Image 1: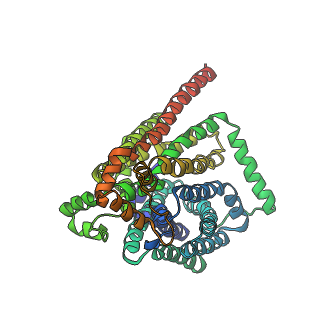
Image 2: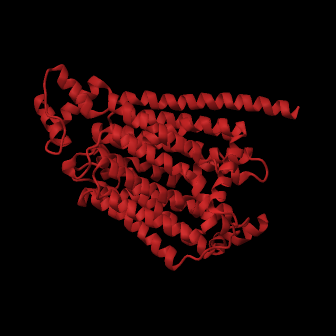
Image 3: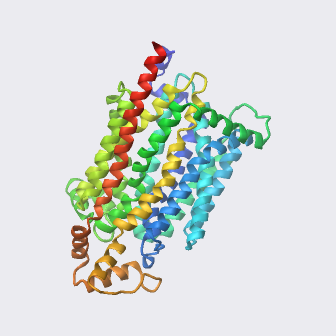
Length: 493
């Protein structure tokens, strides 16, 4: 079989893929374009000043919306995968895209907390319907000759969409305002809807004679069966810590950059090296938007993943996971520790290397500990730690951030120490108005006020909490590896 795979060659491998494979890969690109194009700027949109078209929510409200909804998103595939097997992939995709298009569009139209939460929840249900179907189509469209290469192509599409979505949303919202971001996301999904209606044909699959209720119940029973294996369950619980730390790159860092970090030095550096790229990335203030900075994580993964994968190819999964988490922990610390944007970029690079080292080995280890014939069942638990990490993320990105790092809260603290009062933020007195008024009362420029508050209140210290979670995860893996290794030795002796 390996000889047959080699004989195909690169062109032969590409030609071996079926039409459903390419359609699923293209749809994955557009779906990720829409998701990351919105999610990369969502924190900024939710908490930004209302006079710029954003919503002006508190960080706690932002944390609730982003954490609770994504928790539901990553939990639902346990059920939506079973539903898709029952009703068919084409119908599932149509339902997913209709929900996604409606959710994305109306998220840009509504402004109240409850309405935004509801529309984002519609997006989450649509995404949860899509996720298992796309992977299932790729699995059914490949065989032993081309499956490894096929999933490589598929995940390349994930990263292409994940990179270009935020790139365009950052540029569009800077030029045309916030609503265009939601319109872009909805348009990308409409493209997928056209593809699935007119070009996609239902692939051959086993017909499920069970009722929908019984199908869902069986999927829940199967997941429970997998979780009865304590080796798997303990690993999943420990890895909640990794994903909790990982989430801060997308939930917290964009807002942190917006409030505390001047990104002009990054623009100046790019302008010296690649002037056309720098001009494309530049915003109206002559700097670079926070989502562009954070999006470098996807860029680094696109260009470095193959090399990192070769380096760690023979590493033991647990060792690679621990090493990767330590590297990511250093990266997150560098990103938050200073208000120098060049260090922020360096931190994101280090974090990306840690992510590339640990995350693939997590999947690899689950596959290795899966009993023969139950690989798919065990892999179905992969999203569980991601789901619960998203649920817990609200505590860091909402409560703790507002307490220790929120610029508005810190300004009020400083003003209170000087017995200075200014109005509460409202529709008539926006967050930008608040910053201007505060700087005036403190007799400083905006930049002087930001630097003074940074040096006085140290908002970057939130990195100690984030990195501490990473360290607890590493210690958990160390103990897990020791205990499991000891049990394996006893079992084989």
